[in-house]
Length: 424
Picture: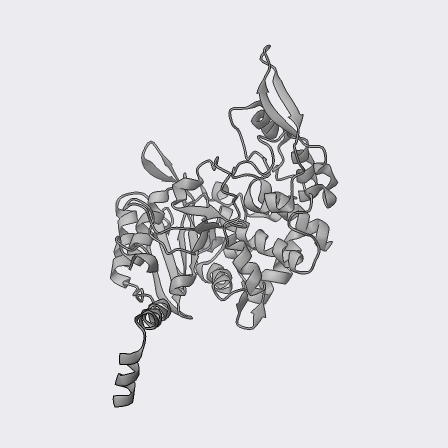
């Protein structure tokens, strides 16, 4: 002990400070403890105040399940409660699955991220860009400054539209019907390629049909129908046995009804309308939407991402690929980002929003720096939080999309004052 004391006494001050700094850097962050009662109450409140008919959530942390809970009804008309095996339409939570499929092919050397998209899908050569109207009020179109790249379709910077809007380019998109359910992906891609871009590739972030183009690219590069590829290379290895675009009839009684808010009141859609996205009878298998899943199934996909691309011995992606997908890919010069800033202090990776800073206000959803996530039109949500070794899946079937549900669920998971390890 005397020798240790003498060594400390003789240690230069700078060395002592360096040792202290090293200890601080390696000290574990404050452990996040899941409060089941708080989350249960938040789910119940969503039902009580009319924002949702039924909710459910599943959280894994440190390799084990730490929370499962439900509230309300999967089908109010049938008086069927939300259950663990309820099947929900997850809409745009399909997109990260598509991104994972495409990045598997990248790992195999099938393409480079900055390759021109037209190298593999020739219809995207010679794209035109909408450039406003001339003096006579007619739309102007100019050649694209550079080709659309594969990276552009992964990060929503290609310039594509995604529905109706204020410009003639939006009108052209609507007229082309690139997501008509009666056409296959290859035809969808060709229809889209005839639509002018909204802006020059790489200059803006605009949520778009790009992920359906990713799906068409998976088909072209793999030589397999998109849905078959995903089943064989993602769903089957992960044992995601109840996630698909085409659900068999015997599962339909477990589907959650869809609820649409109109004039401030939530109304349940008829079952026939709610199950339109069960793509059994349609030619299109979209990359950007259409999957239905259960909490446990989708959690397996999320847990694979949390575990750096592997789950229960099934390697889906390399750790470096998951890290790349979960890294902000938006150049700081890309200032125009549509509604993305409404997701919080985030950038965008490959088919994920990526948290770059702690929450900047009490109104912003809670989360930790480094998390990556996405959601769906019916207000479903999932995220992966490496800092807390946590992943969460939240199901609800409320249209239009209601971000307050996500804010309240995250506040229940983290606590309203949580700012992540940097803020602890």
